[in-house]
Amino acid sequence: MQAILDLLPVVAFFVAYKLRGIYVATAVLMIGMVLLLAVTWLRRREITVLMGVSAALVLLGGSATLILHDPVFIKWKPTVYFWLMALVFLGSSFVGRTPLAQALLGSALPEASVLPRGIWLRLNVAWALLFATLGALNLYVAYRLPESTWVSFKAYGLTAALLVFGIAQALWLGRRAARASA
Image 1 (cartoon, one colour):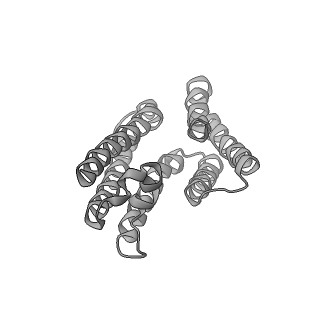
Image 2 (tube, rainbow, N blue to C red):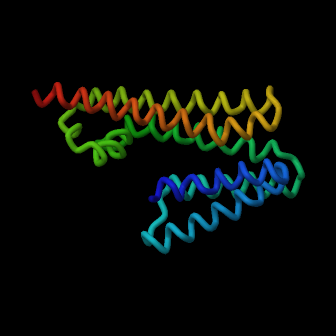
């Protein structure tokens, strides 16, 4: 349920863009993020750090976009978020006992908890590389292609890339865990 809620601001942004353009879409995204925070807080009594950072970036980039009437700020939001995520994933390899990939995926795949730290570290680096690549790709699309292409890429391409990579990682972990327990 939370995953569907998390996507609603992006869907609203895409629809608003198609109907009214980038500035209305930016305002809709900002309102959507505030509503998402409120609904999540009411349901769970907590806001994850990732959601908080994403909301802060939307509100900062969105405000700059609307005040300065320049969409470049909202276009940078995915890149800044992804590059921060890449740094967090890399940093978690050196700080703490558990890499972030293990902390996030280990609870979803308890059978994978038996895997050695080296596997989790490789997975951590894979996520960091994915986020770094998606951040760079977002900038390429934002600066080299038409705005409408960037909006579609943001709504569909980035979401699909994360979903496909996550499913591939879960399958890979499942196979590794099955081999480790056999």
